[in-house]
Length: 227
Image (tube, rainbow, N blue to C red; front, side, top):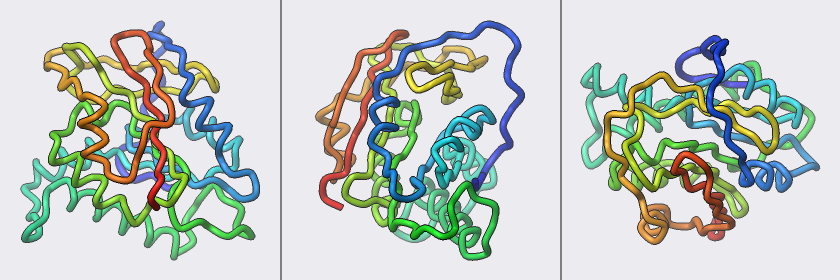
């Protein structure tokens, strides 16, 4: 397991909202069985999620992209000519991840199996709600070399507001249930990303399934068709 960003936070002892998920169960049923699946989690780290995905023998990489982007902004990190801050942040983290693979860092992976070129599953959670359209386009441009035909992405998109001031932490309870660990105030409007516009911002992906969840959330499972 590769972790880039903050360490998993202790789980809150109080009751937190639980929601049913259909897309996660579908995505898990489609993971490859002949080799360790490669999974990229773009949300905040969660110890229970690491334990959950370990049962599938996943090569799990965690990049808290929102935290990394916020850190880049706070540090005033220079942006390459013609690039963007989110592109610089993602590229930096992916380079560190690749360096970790080459150095043989700790991973949940069968070393005897061949590692695929791209990710099998990308967990975006509610990240897209916190990115501008140009940032979404840049994110998927940078991730393009890390994708392959059949790469799936799970994304939760709010269709009403307001939403919390920062991305929520979704904890996997089991294959069909998530827990929302969130203490941030709801003080910003939802961008209400529409499906046709999202697909234009994410070339190569098509909607494989879409479900209406509780709490004003639309659950998407996208799949890469172009490779």
